[in-house]
Image (cartoon, rainbow, N blue to C red; front, side, top):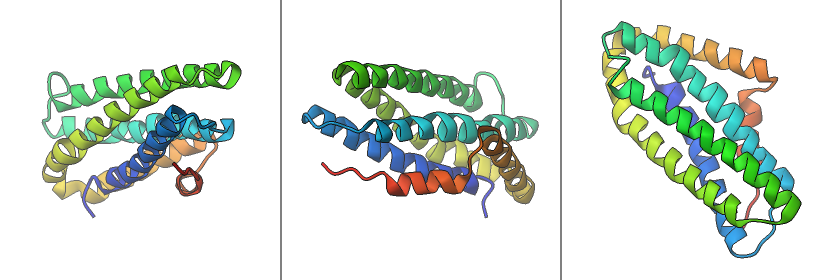
Length: 181
């Protein structure tokens, strides 16, 4: 098990949500109505799983461990990922606002724009982490993979407990979002 395997598994779930969001955007552009419950599930996942749990694992476990092994916290890949995490949070907040406008006023154009911006940003971010940061982390932390994975698991459990949820909940949420173009 590589030091970043847990985070890569998170990325698989996040990529499934990205696919669902792309479908939502396409459906909205084609004049279809999206139930509020589906939008709320996407928001729940984006805020609680992606921003709180996944980013928490990186920010509270992976990044400090990499810094302790000599990777610079400022001016390098860690600083860039932290900056992009903030952008992800801001984009998710925009989706919350435009979802409310869509639900109350039927204004789908702003929601489509916000979803598309989120999808584009998060897709690129995941690619950078998978292809660059995690590749470096797997090399740098090879001798600490058990420690790193245990720590990531602890942070994940702490974050999920704090929001009153479980990984299984988010895995099922992804599997049960039923959208057809």
